[in-house]
Structures are given as structure tokens and as C-alpha cells.
Image (tube, rainbow, N blue to C red):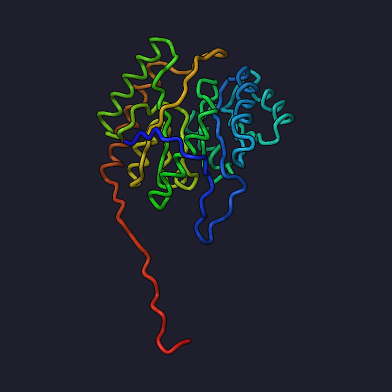
Length: 274
């Protein structure tokens, strides 16, 4: 795991591979939500304020079957924010599926995900994207993940305890070298995500899945804020115990991964030509 503290200039533009389909935006911010009506307007405005004039972006909200007026709040914000797109699930399908729906609809080269409860700070996105571009340049490809690391969490003591237990279990079993896999703030290429195996709860195992692809994972300290509106949808069962079967599956996948180094053989020019 690498934790860089430099303050490199923001430089999100990378040359696309020959023949690649051009993206409409450099960045798509994907936000899954379920019953977060009160948090919609404040967070959308923060995202816009953090990215306007910095990078070409869109915001893709995925309403995962909300029943509290979230859909209406998003519709109102679409009249205010031209960057905002909305995908809706008729019934709740879970956070991983909501993230996937948003990414599949996204038109950006890079994806930034964050939770819809307002605890992730959108102002951290430019720094994470800068790190992503720097790491991609070092690697020569974009098999990478920049993960937020909530070094100063502002949750209740019980919530912090739950996350600490879940992180310890995951770290020891998966050895993914990531101190905070539960942080919703992450940046990675869209093209990488669509190569990863999809399953329910996969968002909790992104670092391990990226390493399985032979990629790099960098954890970067980010801001964390207390929840001031709405209520948490997580508890002991969905933080740890319901993920044990999925974790076993990820371990199985990781042990059978094989990502060989490869290169293209170029055709030699025919002799005698000019």
C-alpha cells in the first residue's frame, strides 16, 4: 500500500488508447442513494462547487427504490443542475447493484463514487483524481484504484467499532493492504470496473478485486463528516456477517487469479519496399 502526501497539480487528462471510444466527460461522479431525500440538494450542490471549472464532469445519482421522496428531490435538482443525471431502480437492489447501474450509465473516463449521506466530502475528489492520473502515468496503464481513508471518523463509537471489526476481518483474510475498505469515496477508471467480476456486495471488496487484476491500490487520507440528516442504513449484520459468504468467494477468486505480463508482437516490414 502506498500513501503519498505530495500536492501535485491537478492533471486529469490522459491520452486514450488508439481506437477507444471517446468519453463525453473526464469524470463521472456516481452516488447511490436509498431514502436520502434530505441529503440530495446539499450534496449535489457541494459536488458542483467542488468540480466546476476543474474538470469536465457529470453526476449520476442512482435512486435504489427509495420511498421517502428521494425521487422527487432528484427531479427538482435536475432543473437546477444540468450536470445531474438520474437512474432509478423500481425496487431496492442494494448498494453494489446501484453503483453498477450508475457506472454502466456513466459517460466519463474516470469514476468517482461517494456515499449519498453527506459524510464523504466532495472537495476530496480532485486530489484523488490527481493521484489516479499520477499512478496511471507511473504504471503505463489504468489498472488502479484510489481509495479514501477516513483517518478521523466522525461516526458514533458503535459504528466505528463495527467498521473496525469488519476492516480487521477483511484485511486478515483478503490481505488487500487497505486500511479502510468501507469508505465510499473511491476513484478508478470506468474501463477497469467493467472488467471486474460482478456480485452482490462487491463494492466492499474493490481493493481485493483490483489487486486480483494485477492493479495497484493507493489509500489516501480524506475528510469525514458526521451524518446530520437522515439515518444510517447499516448495522452489524450488513457490515460483516452477511459479507462472509462473499468474502469466501473473493478469496477463491483471488487464489485463482492469473494476470501474466503480455505484449503485442509487431509485424516486421517486408523487405524491398520504399
